[in-house]
Image (tube, rainbow, N blue to C red; front, side):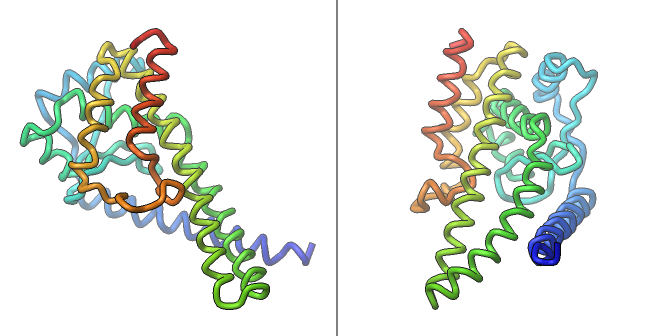
Length: 228
């Protein structure tokens, strides 16, 4: 049992770090967010709520500039103020905003927050183990290799979650009678809206899949479901 103690401690450290990160994020969200109230968006949110069989679909606005959406560990859905500014400027339609909400609901429905907590803890332990082993075998570059390998693993797992959330969103949008067209059109705008932060980064190191792959997967799912 003692021989496994270092690994148990590493996993416990990873869990503690994740919980602290989740607590810190919740505090930021609580202090810097408001309930979304928009007469043009509400009919879209109502259609999503009806498709889910719930009376209401609360969405919150996180008061930060980047264009993003997120699902908090406690299940709340947020759009950033930066996203809302693009919407108010007419660069993003209500249905496209609805596709973002549907995507974040996919993260909640698939339990990605809990999965990422487990993945993060395991990756932390793996990173330390690889850094120790490779650091001894390959001085100077062993630690760099360990970081690249664990970063690539984390990116692969994150990309898997994004594809799953996209799939959930497509199914929900189709059920709501909105269809996948707004989901696709938003992705086609996304690089420009976010200033394409992944440009030049290898796909296997990105936390989100490249846009053409996501669009192709959405179209393939819609065609498979007979909703193309």
